[in-house]
Length: 256
Image (tube, rainbow, N blue to C red; front, side, top):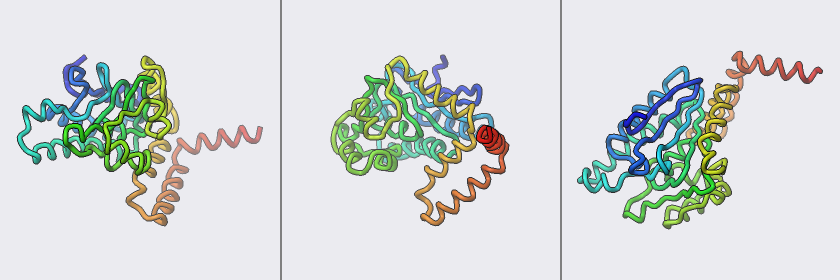
């Protein structure tokens, strides 16, 4: 495996993005931040990508920012903020794209790693996984989309419970809260995420992608505008071969 801090592999319509600093629990330093922005921008801009799978190497998905690197390499809040902005551009590329994203979040996900998980549309964790914020423990505040996405995922009160404590959710709690979709045996996390990504890539991938886009972008529209965007999107979908073939097959089965 390459020693690049973020890896990209595209095969069969699936872009696999791997966080690759296993010795630091895939925590972000400046080099990894730049690689993340570059890889996510490339993956979301490719015509041959129908689904995206996020994963981490080693024993954890992502521990957020590399606090040790911050202490050694960063001397001002301005530098920390700029580093967050670089990573944010990658998160924005994923969430704004019409490509569904699944995360294979094995082991621990904490701090900014939670923001990376929240940039996915479907998360798979292991039975032994733990998920939390953890910012206040080092005197910092939520970043990498956590304050933007966490309350939308679990509700404001539960988001506050995570942000205002050092609590780590167990896997079943995270599923109960709506933070993750699947809890599987630890050794099955990657395989289950692959199954989800493959179902999108081999299915009506444009329809999945447009459904994701409609939901992710709804906050920027009024209710009336959202209804109009839904009408426009379903009309455009109906004109695609992807829908016409499936509608014809469904109608034929119904007649039978």
